[in-house]
Length: 347
Image (tube, rainbow, N blue to C red; front, top):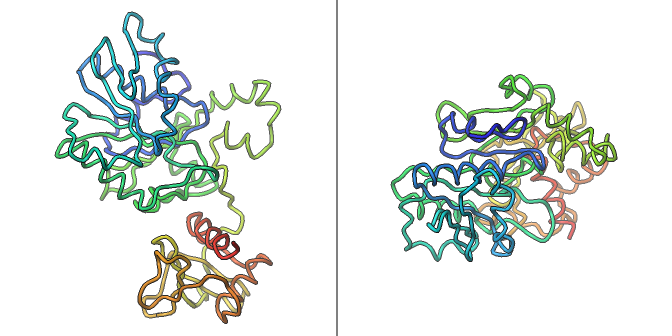
């Protein structure tokens, strides 16, 4: 076994015995390397196979070099890639697969696969987008692979944003500011949390080793970007697209006004007339039948489909107050969801 030093030690993570592991780490912090080492080591020792998963076929173009950075740690072992198949000493050890076309594998059996590494499960704004109903895609894929067996999954990503389909689906929330130090710290600069006692099979890990941060900060590039938002993301593992501005719990005097639905998520709009502030919250009033939808996917009975704000007597004041900074959000997820709604109606 190698010494991982200040890079992510996957074997430490595995001691928590979870089923789904969401590992958020610094760029270059060893996430992909750790999964590769585990996959190769376990195949050589036990004959267990693995799957390396990406979202789209295009993301697997460079898979032929997958072993390049780890081969030296397995001297005398022949590591090669043929097509989308990983071979170790000439035997099939694993498969590279895109989630987008995974449904065609429904009738295929993978009895020797015991682990899945889903790389870059969180994506940034740009060319790629999440699949429609992506969680359903992934869970169907997992069922195809696991059947009735226990197959562990490593969801790996850089700290882009904590608002993503997986955290929303499994109701994963992270604390903010100073709370994160006491809530997660395991004493080694790595932040770990089991979701809750009722569901110990989900593990969240924010990988942020102080030695790695110090080393990266001393490089010429680290010094060049010191003090920038990108430095906080790439070196300190702070979420790139998330800002704690306007995050605040709603006041006791806030009154519920209406709900908004977006991509399957329902959020409540509250107003504190004394403070002159709107609050966007996960809390909703089921007795209030006023609910706005912003996509045809969310439009159903008892919702009003909105393409543009226009002169809506309820929505227009909300967005007017948003423009002048009078809107607060109870957590990062509802803030990011609201920002997505703003972009939807602005285009």
